[in-house]
Image 1 (cartoon, rainbow, N blue to C red):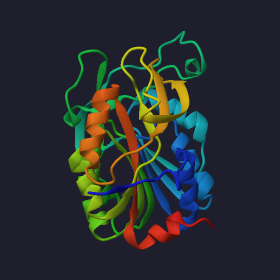
Image 2 (cartoon, one colour; image 1 turned 30 degrees about the horizontal axis):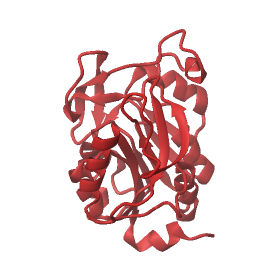
Image 3 (spheres, rainbow, N blue to C red; image 1 turned 90 degrees about the vertical axis):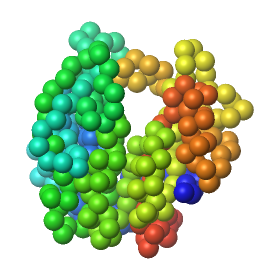
Image 4 (cartoon, rainbow, N blue to C red; image 1 turned 120 degrees about the horizontal axis):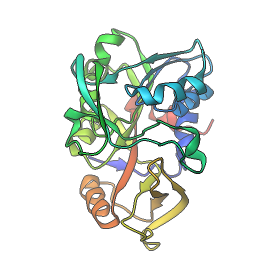
Length: 275
């Protein structure tokens, strides 16, 4: 599986969303919508488009609604996306507590680390909720989708399985999928799309900073969990054997994330165009 260098096309995540405008107005999906910031970026790129946003965690709903308001272009599904419809345990490991200093103090109750229990091991700390799960193929029917963002803390493969009908039929133009080294997620995307990396997020161990011989760091900031994170690009990496490189670098640095930009092969020239 080849993951192409996306730095020139997507110097930051805003560029990924700005390029949606090249695909035309249509239906966009924000899966793991959290505060709604990505929903806002989708609408900025395609003001005549429509967004279906999916967010199962009740603590995030008021913040999403504060940001989006009653915008008629947005439909909020208070549910998790999976490959089976029904109900499932959803674990939230931490959230913004009252009295939090800094910018995150405005978002009491917010969490970016909620995940379906079926997505992997559940830590002892935190809270567990029962949430509704929905399947995208069942909701979409034959509808075309311009853009899909997926940030679901390890349940990406379940989301893709529930979208397999639309993917196989070529009804999804482009995707932006959180990647943490899962080979099966990359394989599922590579079956239908050309793949590009985007700006990386590095969470180093302890007080150590990313190695400047390996990484070009462009931003340093505090996460909602109070942890220091860095955004940047590797100075060199292989196009092939990407999963092997990613896992090795993640183990070396502490923790690594990258959102994969997946573009349907027939529209790659359009999505990457400069105009």
